[in-house]
Length: 425
Image (cartoon, rainbow, N blue to C red; front, side, top):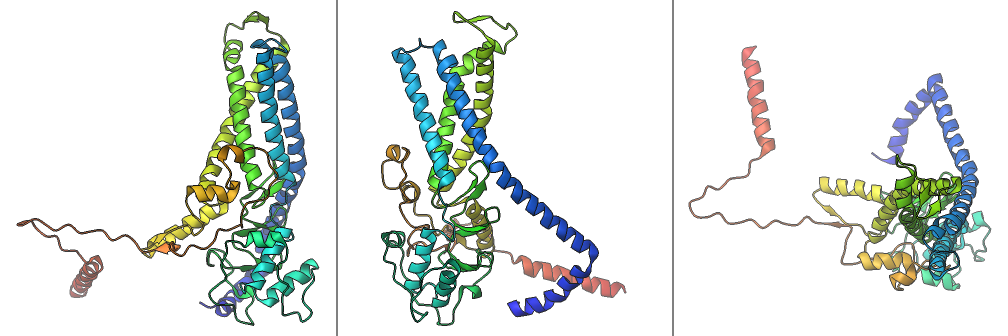
């Protein structure tokens, strides 16, 4: 059913529902609930940032003044080893945390997105009308005639489009991204679309965030703890933050497990390893152990999930979309392949760069190593034909089972049943 025909059939239904008072009331309640959710996320973000700073400061103080002195004498070599390790975890965790909070994830008004739009207009992926609409919306300079587009002169645009290939055929002169499919599942993996909310071209792998109200490249999700959307430019900081939080929670469990078992036990000792159990020590051990177990378990599961996404070249949104496309391909008798997947090693480099993994996890403010999507692969289509199973030849004298046409059998049985009903009448 075409778009015009669909609108002709749906318009009367929509007008009928709009005239209904119950529908109008439900629609207004839905809009009010969505608005309350968005505002609650914006209010909750600064509160969670203050909570993170308070927890890190409190745990660092307790670790250096209460927990570690039970194993090593203060200012000794062993105490300094623990202090250096705690400082390393705190610095890396807070560095990646605030980098994720303060870094633009790649919104439609960022420099990264602007370079992508300009480069796509130059190589013919986008029409001149798309570039003109985007330039006028964001106050950019355009060519004098309005039809030509300035070439990307910055090194950033060349770096982002270094692995991309121009399309086989340029779009028609009157083509506009508004004519493309509305759903990203219906478009190709490298096809641009149109975002109605941001009123501009929609890059591949980009999605609109309703909390920040911006179009984000490689959007994964909106994180209230980060008070920011996790996308292309800050995804590495988010994954490394999860890694260091998991490591810090594991260290806290090892530091307090034995004392927690004794303090929380039925004996309730007053002395542990020759040290008197004070209220401060009891509070530090109990709070640190419970916090490390609860937060560490949740963050470790989340970190494992994002490791899987990094190695398979997906985001959380794309994971569910690929699952839908995989089911559709299975119905058609095809096998779906992720068009952005280039193997575990290349997928890891797409996020963390070509450096050694031990160096990649160290704090660094470097930009993402490549484009939001990898170069097109000629030998790996998104949909591949199913594998043909080799039929084994039957042995001599064995019965050969002929394939049964189920549809034909059902039709014959239904026909016989109808004939019996006619005869009974």
